[in-house]
Image 1 (tube, one colour):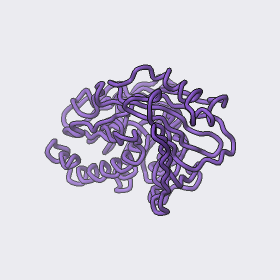
Image 2: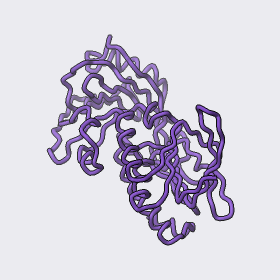
Image 3: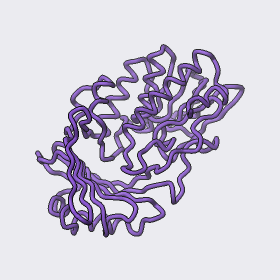
Image 4: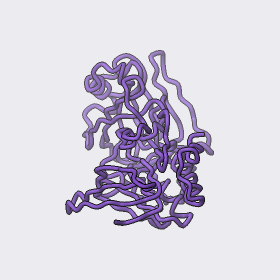
Length: 322
């Protein structure tokens, strides 16, 4: 049985940032990812503040486009805003961003296990036992750790321990999102669309990258009527958006669940929850990358404190949610 100071489930922005913080302090950490490469099956608008690129030591390869403004298409007209230089945004593909973040975690000393599925998490004798299965070989094993951090998305395994995000119709948004091919497009703004036909409690968006644009609509689940119908209207009939989207090739299409409310509790004895698994997303824009990275930094710091003091109690870890 392998033993680590901490196990982190999920090598997205939250998980890799958490693992990196723990490894930089000199503790052993196992970062578990179900896909062959972090971010491989993730698709989202991919926007976040440009300042994070330098702050995290990432290269320019993660930047698809620098975003210099926002356009709000409202039922009563268009409102445009420039973004100040210090607040510039960028877009990125998750398969590129997540891979870069996981590489930083590995370079700091984390062990990354890809193609690995967590089948069960058990607390036993003051330790956490994480049961995993390799999706390629079928091999099964158990990993022992002092701490576990769930960064496994809104359908988190943390719910078994009554912590993390619990989806309900009034605290969860659902979205349909795709990548639309548009080589060398000249778009440089976030575009957000509101009004009839799109979503009653939500909006549609266009986030540009170099040769594609990310297009989607999202709304609060309790107020969704027919998301696919609304999505088709947005692409093919909306008086503004359709002129940019209709007839273009869709290369990827997915649906996703997005937390619209923070989880009630994100810690327990020997456990913490971070990122979407903890409901760390903006309830208005549905964006989660920035919040997941910030949450990962905090989770990493608290994990290091716990490991320093060999204290994984409920009381000690409660400082994570203060």
